[in-house]
Length: 61
Image 1 (cartoon, helix red, strand yellow):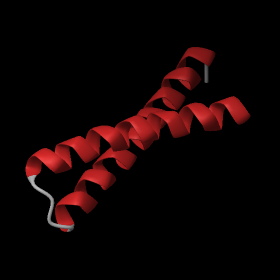
Image 2: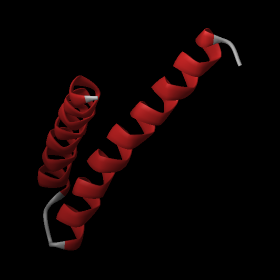
Image 3: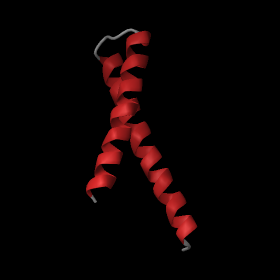
């Protein structure tokens, strides 16, 4: 496996993790009775927090 393929694989993994965190937050908001606007806001915040978590994990590694 080349370095470029490895980087692309890691990028997909990181992106998937961030999306998973964001969508999970949005779905939890919807299951708690939030409106669609509130769920969208929570999803955005979840995406930001997921990105921050990935950044922190990479920074500490």
